[in-house]
Length: 105
Image (cartoon, rainbow, N blue to C red):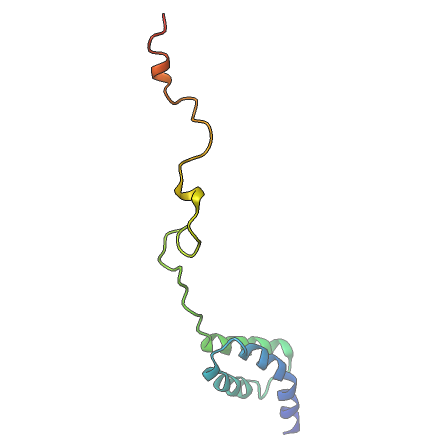
């Protein structure tokens, strides 16, 4: 029995680190689930993979406000460059037909 408590104390930093991003109500249940799953665990790698798989069942990402919006719209402030007319010289092809209309052949 003493070995399982020493393993629990060895894995406590791992459990605490993985429990931090969870919702406060899920942390205790996550800790209990991981501690029961790691009761017979002997290595750090196996402990991490086991805790990671359990963490995925408890983690619920926050909603993304950008979902469903077109690309380039949304959270950014309005820009004078985006809403204004293009800056710079006109395209040299613009008005070409008018310039060459009265040329002698």
